[in-house]
Image (cartoon, rainbow, N blue to C red; front, top):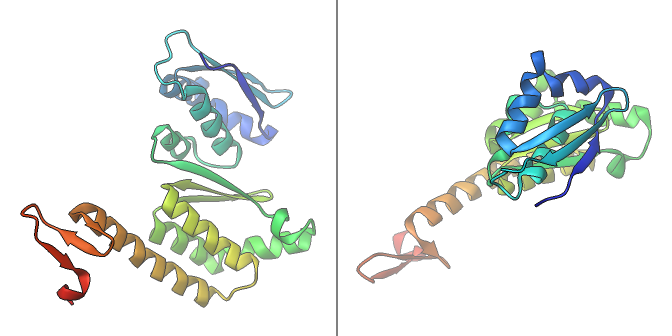
Length: 206
């Protein structure tokens, strides 16, 4: 059985983690088969597996759900992490831009964009959830989409123009669509293989 895990949560996110009448805490416990012991004064959350926990990754999932709430996500979004296909990525901004408060504010503003445009484009094109909180940018979504979103954010942090980033995202979105199509119809190594054994190169279809 998995051992007890623990992590720190910012004081101002404890309320969101507990929820009204403990509703969020109970939802996380039910979804992961764990027990959350929340020390509100210290901001420490202890995660213990229940005796009848079905999923061996329950503690791991609970850890990431709690971490997502701690990084500013709505608990309902954070609970998506119960799915095996959904992941959490936390990007530390100081690792890219240093500890300057002015630089932090400037880069956070660039990631958000005017009237939230840049953040919305990243979220909509890649179907990811994103939260900018404190010194981090956090993403929840499928792995391929998250990695592209992270690359786009890194481009912004390195000074790329928004127009360039949008073009990159559009190109990657098309690549994802093609990948999904290939997976759906069974294309492998630029070939389509039908059930009757006939093979076609992609070039033959152009």
